[in-house]
Amino acid sequence: MVMAMPAIDIGRICVKIRGREAGRRCVIVDIIDRNYALVTGPKNITGVRRRRVNINHLKLTEDVIKIRRGASDEEVYKAIVEAGLIEKYREVEKKIARGY
Image (tube, rainbow, N blue to C red):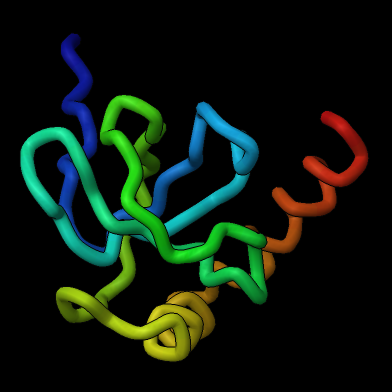
């Protein structure tokens, strides 16, 4: 059985796999072109600031939140809370902080 890969779309929750923020969760806010996306943590939750990242440096998850293209960090935060994913975010951060 072949599993479908999650699509790269706005609102998709990802894990950064490269760079100083590796292992931290982020949300795709905009798709710049076929190689780059604009992501945010938001910074007050995961420490990932809004930045352009190479799509190859992201591990896509199954989770998607409902946000508009170019949403602000406050809008992303509200959508994460409404989707009930805030505890999942904090769990991951605790694991990263402990070095797991």
